[in-house]
Each structure stands twice: as C-alpha cells, then as structure tokens.
Amino acid sequence: AQTVTQSQPEMSVQEAETVTLSCTYDTSESDYYLFWYKQPPSRQMILVIRQEAYKQQNATENRFSVNFQKAAKSFSLKISDSQLGDAAMYFCAYLVEEGGSEKLVFGKGTKLTVNP
Amino acid sequence: ETGVTQSPTHLIKTRGQQVTLRCSSQSGHNTVSWYQQALGQGPQFIFQYYREEENGRGNFPPRFSGLQFPNYSSELNVNALELDDSALYLCASSVGLAGMSDEQYFGPGTRLTVT
Image 1 (cartoon, one colour):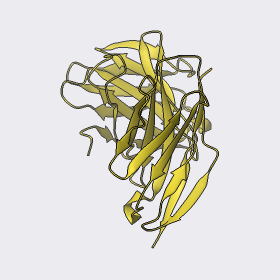
Image 2 (spheres, one colour):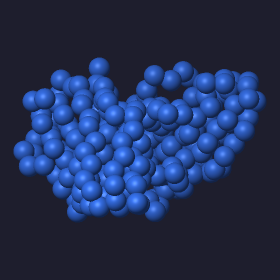
Image 3 (cartoon, each protein chain N blue to C red):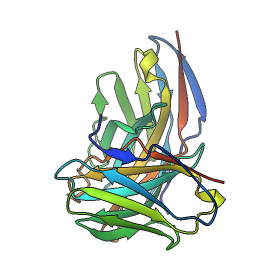
C-alpha cells in the first residue's frame, strides 16, 4: 500500500529564515509523481511544487525547493526567505494510478508558523 | 484562485439525513476527484469521474455516490449520514488522465457537520 508520512506535526520559522519540512513515502513503483500542497486557513489546496520521480534534478519554484532522495523514498520541502504568507498547513502527496484513475495519497500535514 | 468553486461553504445536517455537495470545475476539465478531509488529517480519496463515468473509488461505502455533468459541474451525494462523515469535502479537477502530467486544481471545500 502506498503511504505518505510527515513526521513533523508542527514547525515554526522566523521571517526571512529557512525551514525544511520532511516527508517520506512508500511505493513499489519506479515512475511516479510527488507533490507539496499548501492549505491556508481559507482551506483551498494550492500546489507548491511537483517532482517527477524519473527526473534526477530536484524541482525548484522561486523560494521553494525539494530534496528528492529516490532510494531513501524521501521528499523534503525547503522554504527559503520565509514570509508571513507562507504560514499554512503543508501536505506532501503521492500520485497513484489505480484501475484507470489517478488519486493523490496525502500525508497528515505539517502546520507551519512564521514568526515576525 | 483555481477556478474551481464549491457550494455550499458550510452545511449542518442531522444523522440519517442525505446531503448533496456541488462542485463547478474549469471549462475543459474532464476529470473531477472528490476527497474527504477529517479534522487534523490529510485528504482521503473518495472517487474520481472522467467524462461523466466513475473510473476509480477509494475505501468509502456505497452510500457515497457522485455524478458528473457535461457542463463541468459535479455532485457528491452522501446518504444515511453518520457522525464520522463530519469533514471538509474537497473537489479537484484536471483536464484529463494524461499520464499524470495534469495538475489537479482544488476547490475551497464544503465543511459538513453532522449532529
């Protein structure tokens, strides 16, 4: 069974500092997609960054980057120059293809607080 | 803004009742997925529709059912509501099942409370 584990229920960071959120996953597939989603208090899930497993290069999107370690099944998110607007729940997710459908399997999330 | 809307925003129902939640996807998005997010948890996959046909289902009982319409709207129906059905219900749409390359766009969710 595919599972996603986020071991940090809560994290905090000072504004302008860097924080890393951890995620591990379990899969027997060789090709798959991993995602980080942000869910602010408004509740709308927003895609932060996406990594394709067959790509060796770590994905980056402006201040957001990932450290993808395929052998270790680890997919951490680094937020640089943290801003107050980064405060939210962050969910790591794995895309599974089953029986013709594609579903996201989510971790339990990490609540990020940004202190001014 | 993702262009995906959901209604209503909040809903309170009594155990045993039935409820219909609605989602409006972006034009051209042929796939819609529904997720249940219990308090303090990540979303869990309920089912997915592609061009008005259900093409995948998670571990949810048959009292959870859905419909997808040609106008890119969809519904999630839950019969015989139970207290444990209290959760945030999210829909997510994408263009299609193009080899996992499509981004899924989420709506803001409907908060359902069952008393």
